[in-house]
Length: 129
Image: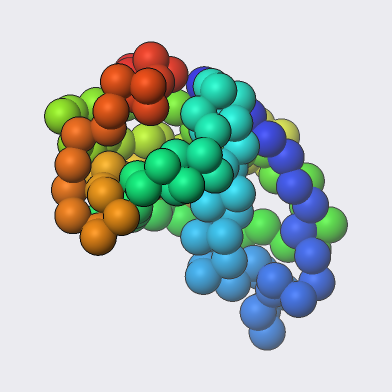
């Protein structure tokens, strides 16, 4: 599991003063990248080697609104790992309040974008639940 924090900025909010739902995708992406770094998965090197992890599906359940200056904590952890894909679970919290939770299905691909098993050197144990 990995955890990171960020602060809600004014331009991320809609006319109701809440974080616009599309911005949660950016928050989750940031947290997944931080997760990969935390487990020692060198994503830029993986790309240079001709591989990648693409988001194939994302499900977000919004629980409570976040507003300007809220400090959000985002947890990311793997819940499933197959031969060429897996699922990360993510939670966004403000203190103990659950703001949103997501399930992100990813697939490993080659440089042409075709599904492929990650070579052993990139099949990081941290991707396993």
